[in-house]
Image 1 (cartoon, rainbow, N blue to C red):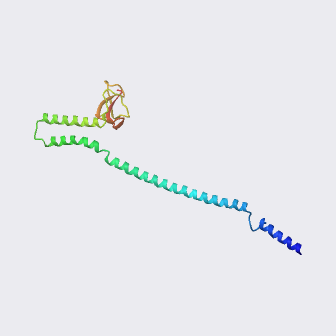
Image 2 (cartoon, helix red, strand yellow; image 1 turned 180 degrees about the horizontal axis):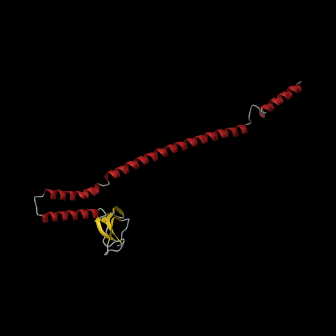
Image 3 (tube, rainbow, N blue to C red; image 1 turned 90 degrees about the horizontal axis):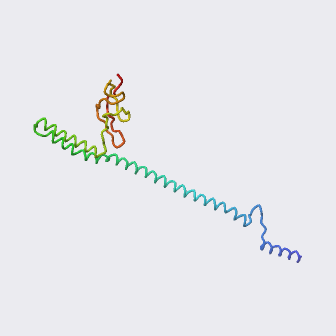
Length: 187
């Protein structure tokens, strides 16, 4: 029996030094670490996902604020865009007011006053970039002219402008109002 006791003691000592693993209930150290790594990696990915979602929400809010600020600035620009142009037109209005309040003057004086106001008005429009569309000796151009009538003419070739009925204007390269004209047609 001493031998059995000695063998039992040896096997117990070996078990404490080199434990056997019950495969059904326990995992060895290496496998346990391998299985806990995905859990740690999963947590890491979840945290990264949450950070991306937070960043996305912040960017969306920032873009929404940018869009609102841009719309507000555009509306302010629209509200006050005409300020400078209107300030330049006010002296013309003052001149018209003075002309209407003037005592009875001769027809010649009234004509001279209106011509001065007309010149003042055209000078102001020119400073603002508004120029009249020339029609004298021009061919009809549907981009610049609006044909109101077609009249037979021996002096002007077909498709040429016979008469300017209402002057057209352009602001730099954009037509503000097309010139209303009568166009020559074959007799």
